Every structure is written in C-alpha cells, then in structure tokens.
Image (tube, rainbow, N blue to C red; front, side, top):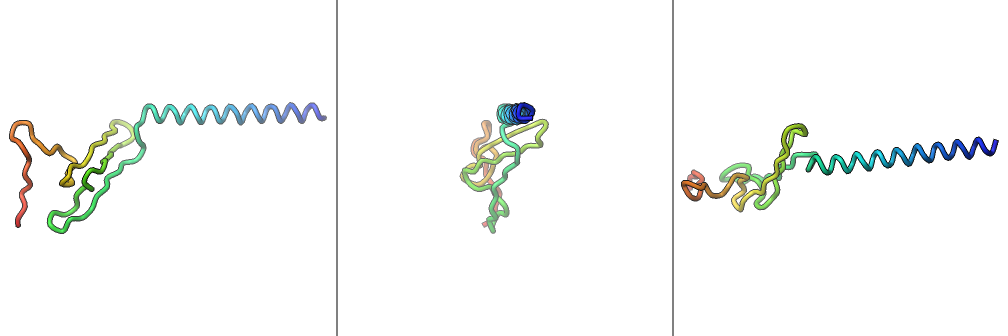
Length: 96
C-alpha cells in the first residue's frame, strides 16, 4: 500500500514538473516570436486639434497574426515622421 502511494506521488510530481516545463517553454516561445500581445495607443485630447498621442510615448499596434509595429510619438503628438525627406518639415494646417 505504501509503495503504491509513493509511486502515485512520484507520477503526480513528474506530471506537474512536465506541465511547468511546457508552460515555461510556451512563454519563452511567445516572448521570442511575438514582441507584445496588446495594442497600446496612449492618447490625450487637445482642445484646438482634437485627440493626439502623448508626446514621446510608444504607440504599439498589432492584430496578433500578421504585424507587430511600435513607433514613438514625436513632440507634437504625431506618430508619423516629423520630417519629410523631399519637402522638409511637415506643417499642420491649423487656424489660429
């Protein structure tokens, strides 16, 4: 009886150890293949221009299948490039 109990405890321990190793392997695989799992778009509302990104914040977008993209918002709250290579700086059309 005691031997059967010890054998059952050993089998349960091995099963739990295998489960922990599989979970750790899955976690490592996800961290290596998928940079992040949620989109993050930190925004705030500016009364003159509407919603803009937080300056300097990291904007992350994903659909969890095809693309994972991360970019930094510039100092004006735009996630696009602040300079156009051919025409120079971009200007926003605003009314004063």
